[in-house]
Structure formats: structure tokens, C-alpha cells
Length: 275
Image (tube, rainbow, N blue to C red; front, side):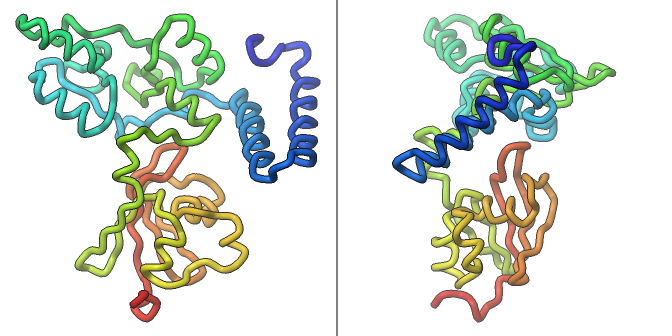
């Protein structure tokens, strides 16, 4: 993939970038800036070794629309999920016919003509789970596509990849102006468990439930999701349960290959709750 890494000089380039990372970390005026630069360049290097399977949204988490769904229902779904485009299928996700963009739906409704979702569907590339992410990025750029479907050897849908998924692999999670209002939610359930957004700040959680982290952890994590990733040593999958040294258990309720979205928290000692 020559647009990012020349094949003949690949090893030399990786070594040069690694050297830049080290020099940047040592010479930058701000330690925080140096860390961000180091992470960014490191993520670019890692991108070269990733496949579509590594960055895709798994089938179970794909939100799509049935081809006969009314326009108002589609708009409501797009608004609820904060998506600009969705895959369109006939009977199930294994029969995807393309994608639809919210602006095309709005334009169709504004024209006052009979609404036909089929007329608004755009083609979506179909790719293998093993396709290198850099090849996928180049293909999407050349074809001006923002979405691709990951299909297994039997033709079934394995997952979905968007440009945003690839970009987030490099720069981290991108929140839009609407997501901020939902970030940081903590809901206490009647059964004594707590359901929390992965982006909840550790300090906010501890102010409410008492001290959880030790000093070493406090220096390395800022959010509940960050704590769980630290415990697991990776981004855990949905359904996994991880125990903290304090005895608190974290169940991953919603997650994708890059981040944890929602956690269910158990075994929070009553005596640790902040008054």
C-alpha cells in the first residue's frame, strides 16, 4: 500500500516513525501533547496490520432498515441513533441492497412525491473480513463510499465498516455535538446494580460511590471504560464480566472492537457509597 507505506522501504519507514515518536516524546514542550502525538503515530503503524474484521461493527450491532419501512419511521431511527446513513435490506441483513442517506430521504419528502426507499438506495461495497484496512480505506476513497459490508465465505453479513470506524481507530472515539448530552449517565437499578456509560469520569463515579482506584490506576485511567480495558488488557467483548481488585464486577453490556459503550456494575459495597 504505497500511499502510506512503500513496500520496499517499509521497515525503514517504520523505524523512522518509531524514532520520531521517541524524539517527539523527549523534546515536546508539553508532555500531554507528546503523548497524544505518540499514540497517533503508533495507531497509524498498527493500522497497517489490521483487517476489516478488526474494525468492523459486528452483525449483532448493525442497525438497518427494511426496504418497505415508512419514511417517518426511518427518520425517527436515524434521529434516535444519530446516524447519517443506514444499510437497507429486504427480509434480513443477509439480503442488503444498499444504503440510504438521511439527506436523500429529506429531499424526497420535500419534493412531495410518492416516497420510494428503493429509488434512494446507494450501492455499498462488499468486502472480505480479511481485507487489509489500508486497502479498504483507499478503495472507499477512490469510490467515494462511506460504508462497506463485510461478508463471510457463504455470503452472510459478518459486519459493517464505515470511514468513521477507520478514523476512530487512529484518533480515538469521535463524539458529535449530540452525544455529549448522553455521555456520563449513571443509573442505579432496584437490584443494586448500576448501569453506566463507559465515558463516565472515574472521579464522578468515586464521588458518588466511594473510592475504587488505587494510586497506580488513578495515574493511568480517566473513565470507567478505561478502567475495564486496563483490567482486561484489551477491549473486552459484549457480555464479558471482569472483576476489579476491590471486588466490584463490570459486565460489558454494549461494546464494539474499539470501545466500551455501556457497563453494568455489581458488588458496589454499600459502605463505600458516598453520603
